Length: 287
Image 1 (spheres, rainbow, N blue to C red):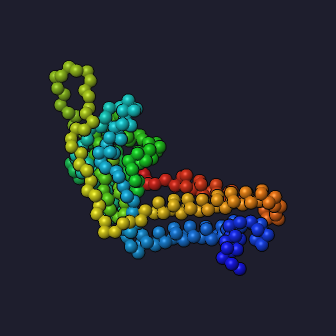
Image 2: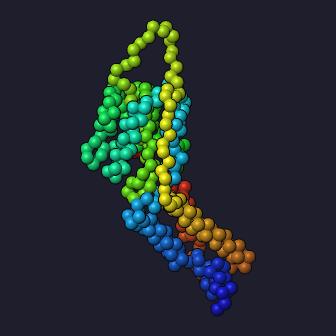
Image 3: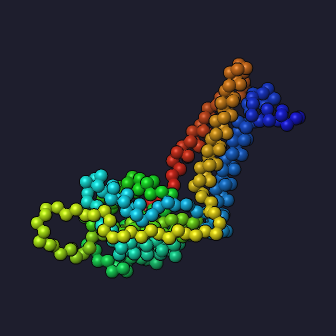
């Protein structure tokens, strides 16, 4: 059998393949699924064997998070939060601690709570809160995730908070190179001394102090983004099945073929599943 004939049977309906391209038959779909699962297994193994090979390239900065947070507050009719270098120290310390002890939670395995990090930098508060995020590529998608979560949104739009500090730290967590973002919200225990100014409103400036940018994590070799790999493979699988279904429909209608094989309902269902996985495959996690 010539190569041309083999390709014909792979991609086109023919009487020798029961008028169904071999690539649309259940055995090939099983191979696609097995290949996708194997890819996931390889990515998990890489995280264990070579920590740091997997990673997420992030464009998030402290300044962007600060500006985006206050943009959400303004949209809700709330005053902007004052930038606090002290809270940034506590937020950065929390991110460093998560990398150092390899955990992703508000409370550490050693029993540290978020409030321990506030106290460690000498920040005395009357009310405080914490938002966490990781594996996000950009600030906008991270903010959308926070704002879609009732608890995280409640922190961002809490009218009782006056100040914010932000930690944006790169490192390796569970074998994957990533960026951790920590928001620390607070209101000082001791209120500022009132002045004799009779103005009824005091406008809080957007930037009350210079906002430092995080250091860029140097990497000896480019890292693999597991989210991107999964999305690319899913898109390839989706495109292959869709193209084959189009070819199948065109050839079948052109030749007016009546075949014993079942309908394309199973393949369409397979496509829908892949499309849903691609649609809802979101980068990043919040806590």
